[in-house]
Amino acid sequence: MVKSLNEHRKNIKPEVRAAARAKAIDIVMEMVSAGLKKMRGITRNI
Image 1 (cartoon, rainbow, N blue to C red):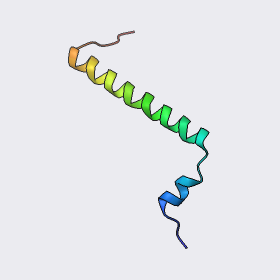
Image 2: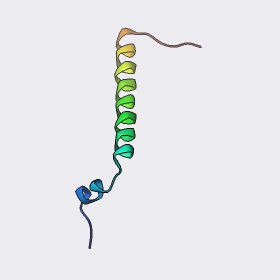
Image 3: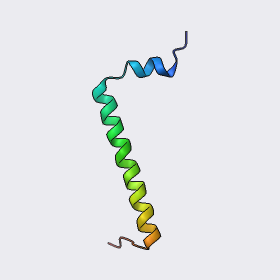
Image 4: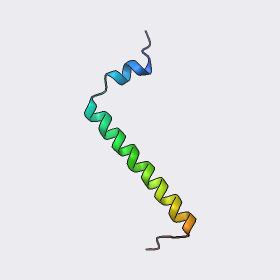
């Protein structure tokens, strides 16, 4: 029998879920920051 996605989510440990959420937030913040820099014409020339 195929399990639904919600059934699989129930088995994820809270620590793993928190780490994944934190990583997702970091990625979104990087994307927002990159978008703002692009809009303002700020580049990083090293």
